[in-house]
Image 1: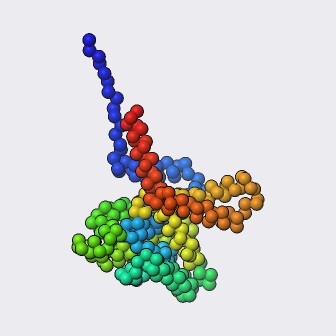
Image 2 (image 1 turned 120 degrees about the vertical axis):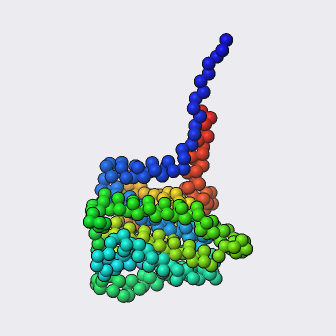
Image 3 (image 1 turned 180 degrees about the horizontal axis):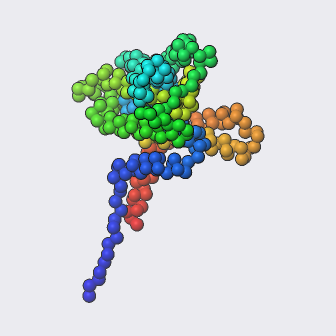
Length: 346
């Protein structure tokens, strides 16, 4: 007597490119259909800009091991450079202006990255902090950067490419999403190339990297340039797509720390970590304000909300540093592996 047995198909993990394609399909297809103006204006647009800025900082700090506290300064350089290029060069396409603004931020990043050739760790962080104060002072002192505006606040130009204008929250969302997607793909290819391996080698041990033939000084400066380029483009998105205004006060020291916190919470040396951390940083204050309004009513005003956010955010950073130094990206990987193991065993 023979017994017929039918084996159930075993669980097979999806290829690595499936998840990003699925996310992009939802982002381009479902979100614009079902999303509200509040979702775009208050959540998605700042999320995309901060994710890109954190991605740029992660290349420098996470992969290359160079600490920087001047991220907001490079965002400001990118935003004001794009504004002035669009204003003063007639007929230049917007994309070309954004690319040139990224190169302007990269040039400033190279200048303030020169101390990395001699300094490390805390001393390098303090030297990059000089970029934050110098750039903000220069933009405030010289009115030429803001087209001689008395307040220093200027309106962003329309987002137009080849005659098509990205108007409204959905249009600006599409514009920001496309820019972030392209630069994220380029960053992914970069960190998985020989250049990315050179970054990691310098981060882990400069002496060993030099022995095996890695040009340490060139690699450090390249990391600063690439990081500043991406952060500068993020500044353009922050000013042109999200705020629709350009002002020095929007790129203060708090913004630099915010980007650094995104990298720490999301996970160093992780492309996904930049997006996980930005999602938490953007959504967390909104959830906290809603929760405070429900529990405490009018007592939970803006001042109390701001202080509560700082306290809770500081506690979260300490918890991540102690319990999970690799951030949300590591938690995601472990959760995915556990789900895959459970599916294979079922």
